[in-house]
Length: 623
Ligand SMILES: *[C@@H]1O[C@H](CO)[C@@H](O)[C@H](O)[C@H]1NC(C)=O
Ligand SMILES: *[C@@H]1O[C@H](CO)[C@@H](O)[C@H](O)[C@H]1NC(C)=O
Ligand SMILES: *[C@@H]1O[C@H](CO)[C@@H](O)[C@H](O)[C@H]1NC(C)=O
Ligand SMILES: *[C@@H]1O[C@H](CO)[C@@H](O)[C@H](O)[C@H]1NC(C)=O
Ligand SMILES: *[C@@H]1O[C@H](CO)[C@@H](O)[C@H](O)[C@H]1NC(C)=O
Image (cartoon, rainbow, N blue to C red; front, side):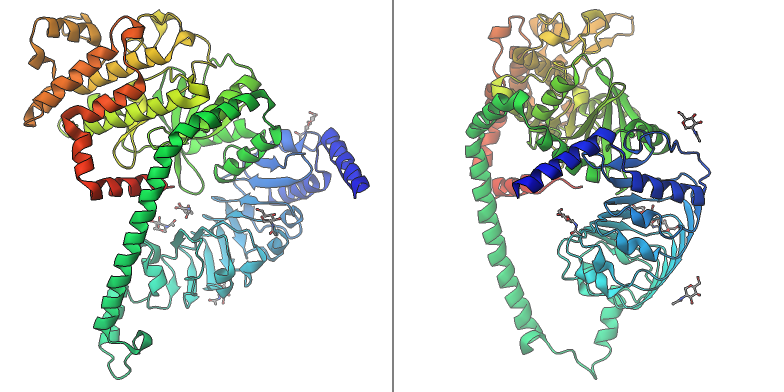
């Protein structure tokens, strides 16, 4: 046994040495020569597949090709047999948005490891493969917008991992197979085919767009038909009458709901309790720090990469170009780089931040990313992946379609403006405070956000504040004050962005609170071109005792909030005092803000609501 291990290890090492999967490379080159894409790919026989070839990704040791992504490169004609099928370690195959014709390649059955298959938007025709169960790991399949005909294979029901299945816009006919047992299924689209109805009940769990225009009688009509055919009454479940059956269902639902509520309450409590443990865990992480095993890191990245198709392997920068051209839109230029919205193959949107002026070396950068990525909290925007190379440093986050708090406050002025109401502003403040307080616990209680401003705060699915862009000051080149885009949020003692501290975070958070209260940007110019610093302005107004003038006119329409606004103003003012050590701690701020207008008390008095909240926070955000 031991000897075997040694030999295996040696083999692996040798492979790392020449790091080129020769057989796989040959297969791909044959494929390319026969397919002749209209866009030229940089696949050169003399260069390394794993490191330079566009759209190709290898496994850790460079011994096999695991992903081929060639979206929209102008492939046309049929896929030549015995080419791609030789890449037997392939887990991701994307040939979407080309003009590939002919049947579904029969030899794809050789691709036993296939998990992600994207062939949509091509001209494939003929039947779907009879036996889908050969691809045991199949997770996401998109065959939409082709000309596949024939039936939807029953074998789909034997897939155990499939999460997304899109067969829309084909010419499929016959019966809809029973996929009710495929519990992993989260998304299905059979729309615009010629399938027989009626729509089975398992399918009705999915949005109606999933079976729109499949060529069958729509569900309500189907019901009518059943009703109109009394000569063959459907036997009721267990022979019970409809009413009794309904009553049983209702009773069971109530019991289930109660159990669910209980479980959620327990989870919520446990989470609350474990927050103290967080520090201990962070401690461990910190101690491991430099020693963190590279394998662990790699496998985690792979995990992420399997879903984020643009972030795998060394050919990334091309994919990025591709991405920027095809489906990315600039969301904004921030302090540390530009953020893009990118739509991935599985149709999820992510925000991709392209960092400029990273000062840290690879290892320090990775370590910092590990710390940031380790924070999982409903009020902290999750870092999904990152990428580091000499030329390109990227961070991938969730995308928030509502826009940032800066946009909600200052953008979209004009006729269609939706005013930001007081309750939402309070939820933003409470959420952001909780998020920042959580960040301050990280890394042994030393992590600094370093870039708190309203454009880095978003509304999460519960419409609470959620902070982003944290922990970067430590890895970036310093920004000198005059050119700093952070101006207006920067605490007076911070002369160099690397010197940001948790107390300077509190200052910046105070400025955000003032922004929420006044509706004014932290630095703005008056009609007379005078530059106004929000903090100084608020000070002067409050000193002159015109307090009411401070508040955003948009808030004046709400009644009975004056006291709360004044309380919030006091809290904000305590954050922006000059002397750092006189500012409150973030954890105290959470309590202070929650106690404004007795929110905490009313929450506690209203138990069901807080349970409700627990349930919402524990469902994973939409993917
Ligand atoms: C492949 O690369 C070699 C050396 O870099 C170069 O001389 C050759 O022209 C390239 N071939 C193609 C087809 O681009
Ligand atoms: C499927 O995935 C698992 C782990 O995710 C892996 O061990 C296995 O080799 C894969 N392939 C097949 C054919 O099951
Ligand atoms: C599917 O389309 C092909 C032509 O592309 C045709 O020959 C075949 O009969 C069709 N099969 C069915 C079941 O409609
Ligand atoms: C199917 O085609 C319709 C009309 O062309 C289009 O609106 C729809 O997005 C397509 N569905 C998918 C899943 O591509
Ligand atoms: C599949 O492809 C269609 C057409 O390009 C696209 O609209 C859809 O979002 C894709 N993804 C999924 C998960 O269906």
